Image 1 (spheres, rainbow, N blue to C red):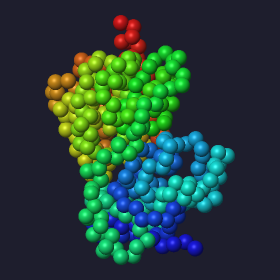
Image 2 (cartoon, rainbow, N blue to C red; image 1 turned 90 degrees about the vertical axis):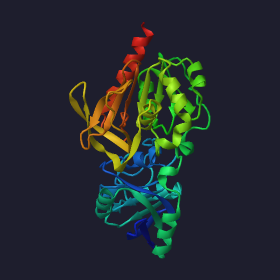
Image 3 (cartoon, rainbow, N blue to C red; image 1 turned 135 degrees about the horizontal axis):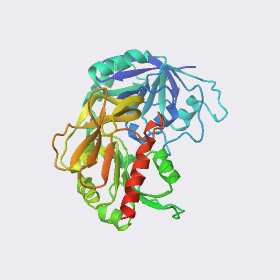
Image 4 (cartoon, helix red, strand yellow; image 1 turned 60 degrees about the horizontal axis):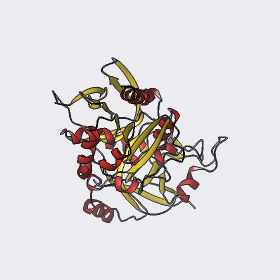
Length: 363
C-alpha cells in the first residue's frame, strides 16, 4: 500500500505526495536541478550532500539504475522529490528500478507532487530548509526546521572527503596528479586517467607540505558541497599550493577556495546553479559553452585584483565562472568540466590543464 507523506518547507508551505524508496523522516536544504537526464549521477554527486533534491523533469527513473553511472560510492542526497517515477524501466544496463535503489541506500523519496510549483516557489523565495516526513503535525515540523542548524553553517566536506590518502595501483602514467578531495566525482579521475595521468587522492585537511612533497606535476582542487566559508582553516594550505608554481586546477568549490585564499569573498546564490544547461562565456575565446553546474555559492566580482583575472562569466546572471592567476599556472572554473550528468562541451578544460603541466615540465 502506498503511504502518504509530506514535503514541508521552513516557510510553512507543505506539499502532500506518496512515499517510495526508504521510509524515514529527513531534513535538508531543498534545491532543484534542471537536467533532463542523469538522475543517478545527481543522486551520487557529493556536492548534493545535505540536500533534498528536486529534478524539474517530470518523469524520473525510466532507464533504471546501472552499476556504472555513479559519481561516488553512495547516494549523497538526503531525499528525492519527483513528479512521477517509473516502476518498470527499460534499458540494457538496468539492474533495478529507482524505488529499489533508494530503498537499498536508505534514502526516502516522495512522488506525486506538483514539482513545477515547488521549483517556481524556490526560484522566487530562494532555497530553504525542508523535510520529507510522514508526520502530519505540520506545525511541529516547521518549528523543528526553524530551530535546526542551517545548511550554510555545516561542514559537509568532512562527510564526503576521503579519510585517508588513496594511492593508485599503477603509477606508470606520464603525469602525476595530486587531488585534494573536497567531494570529488568519479568522472574527474576518469578523465585525468584518460589523459595519461596517475591520480593520488588526499583528504581535504591534508597539509600543503605533504601534497607538495609528493612532487606532483599538477594539483586539482575538486568540487564539493556547502559554503566555502566553513573551510577557512584550509585556506593557508590552498594559498601555499597556489604559490608553489605547480599547475593548479580548481573546479567549483576548488574554484571558490582559490579565490578566498587570495582575498576574494564568496556569497550565496538565491537558488543556485544546478543543471546541464548553464551558458558560460569564455572571455578569452569569445565563445559560449553549455555547461553542467551544481553549486549554491559564487565568487564575488573582482576588479583590478592583484593576482586574479576573470576568464569566464555565467551568461544568465553575470556571476564569475572562471579565474586565472596573472603570474602563476593556476586557473579555476565554477562549473563541472567533467559533466556527469550534462554536456561534454567543457572537457577541454582538462586538456588545457595538461598543456600547462607540459609547458612547465618542458622548461
